[in-house]
Length: 126
Image 1 (cartoon, rainbow, N blue to C red):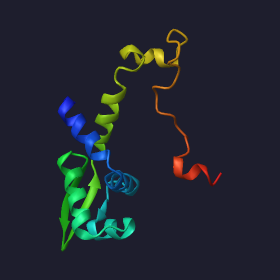
Image 2: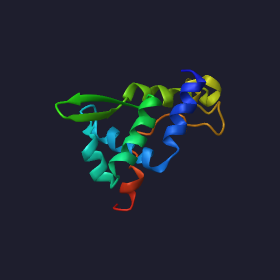
Image 3: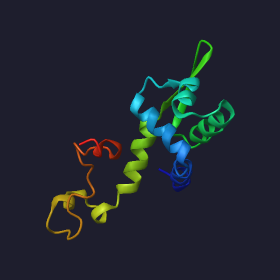
Image 4: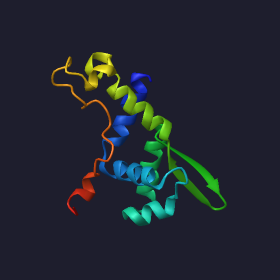
């Protein structure tokens, strides 16, 4: 992944509304959501929503398709995976086998995604 692509994606996600949109689309899965429903769920007026969706689209994080009179937006899961891989590729000195080894003090399993970790918004309910 090119550094320019990474910085564009991180820049797009560094804004609260765009991060909310992206997380909503990730939750929705490949089916995506119509633009109007995204706006309703997040309380965003159409012009503002359109601006943010275009920023995410230009960064390669979302794609759009027309379905009748609606435009459906969905998360680009490959781009998301590529971004995460780029951010973690040098974890433990670029040797992922050390991520669970005592040979990498301070590294431990921090590099690996943690299965079963409760998302932040659901932690309070427990």
